[in-house]
Length: 200
Image (cartoon, rainbow, N blue to C red):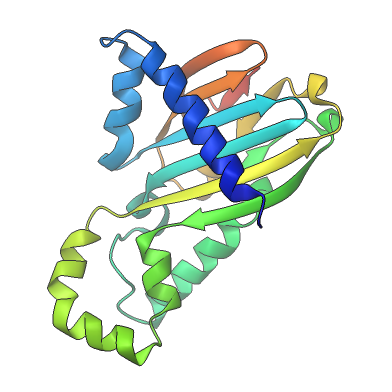
């Protein structure tokens, strides 16, 4: 997945610039930032640039897992494994028009929970947890999960909309604050289970 890092940086930079181009009292700007640690509320950033489609989903871990701490038992470890597997399959989270002929180039997941989980069998890490477990619990009380996806679309002019289907899989995710940069301009808004389509 070597291509994603610069793409993710580009997405973040473009969206950040667009947000800061607004006046300070802009409602969408405030909502986007306010979603960071509000349970039930996440963010979805979209950039369409030529044949490239970039998506960045960020949501509180509790909305997807039901907890925001390092797994305490095998059941929670299995839940985390299952979530990571699902997030690596964005076709379960988003529906794109078939006519646009978009194919996934790369996917990358970020969360302190994933890092802890992947190193949970490391003895040195376990010792660190023993000494700093309380600090880690506090640090990850509000853990977020970020998933970044990059697509190439053969017919980007047919990329007229995107449907967010993750609401069906994760009832704890109630709302996504949208920020999109496309050839048609910039748009923002809120997506919910009953209003899940982004039109470009």
